[in-house]
Image (tube, rainbow, N blue to C red):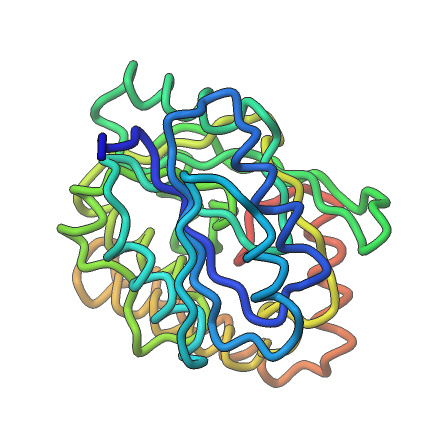
Length: 271
């Protein structure tokens, strides 16, 4: 079998309402030389039937016992054959030119190893809630990285060699595993974002960021402290490691209000 240009990694757990649209949005990309690797992470709904109904030789599905997103992504990474790997969540949609646009950018700028895009956020019935406008160039992204996650996980494309050098996703982190990987990759490569919203994020009930907020905040603090300890940032940036821990003391309603205000301003955040 020929090696594809891009491997798209996806993990799904009980995602029957959305996973077909997510997979089809990849298979219908203008860049057709790809593979889609879907890890069915112990789904108990009709997700296996939905995936079985999708007929395309570029689609690889592996069903396994429930192990969580981080381990599933590492498994998908282990199956990937392409020199470029991209991500898409099972309840999101990639716009048709997304992969072609990202690949063209990475061909033009070989020094960049991690590339994201902007994103539209919609609710379960498709109403637009916000547009994520991330920082674009390496300097702006590095400045933002210690404060918040400047990448939409579902939008990124990465060079496989850099991901491997960074060690893949840290399986000790059930959430914020993407943020941690970006921080480690930032020591090895340059970073960039395309400004256009090339993915649509569906903010459905049950997303990790909604149901495991406490775990997310603790993980953010851990990731930022690691970066300061490794001297990737000056000591005074410890304040950004402490900030998520302080947020834990806030009532959940206050946190949700702050996140909503952040979305409306289009600022980078952990996504």
